[in-house]
Image 1 (cartoon, rainbow, N blue to C red):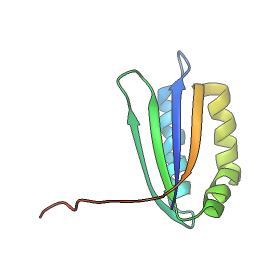
Image 2 (image 1 turned 30 degrees about the vertical axis):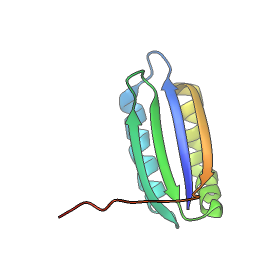
Image 3 (image 1 turned 30 degrees about the horizontal axis):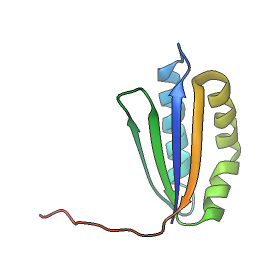
Length: 102
């Protein structure tokens, strides 16, 4: 499994409603891509946003990165929304779980 960690901070005055709309569209596209496993996003107390996206293979992550609509969203993010961002693409080395009791 490949895990993509996207950390970002918004530009002052960024249109968060427009970003949320764009994010919903990107989720719809990504979740339909082969190998998509999951997506979660969080906001820390200091204002940083963190998104975690999981795909089966690096090739599938690359296909997502190069999707034409995603490329346009990346450009829009740099121009309109993000003051800074940091992307990490990671290979899963080990996984442990404690299943929920039902």
